[in-house]
Length: 76
Image (cartoon, rainbow, N blue to C red; front, side, top):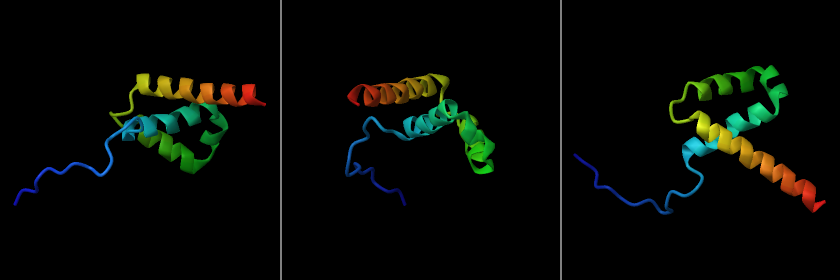
């Protein structure tokens, strides 16, 4: 039996699943010391094999996180 298509309670916004995964990858890039831990290394390997996480998304996430850091430094 087929289920009817339903609209989600909240629309898909800026933070889609691939974008969230790309932000995690960006954190690994910006903080390479995290890769020394086995848990984070396994997560990074899994995300690297995920086809929805593209290099372009990771580059955008790195720029986003660097921008947040820069804005925080300007505020202090």
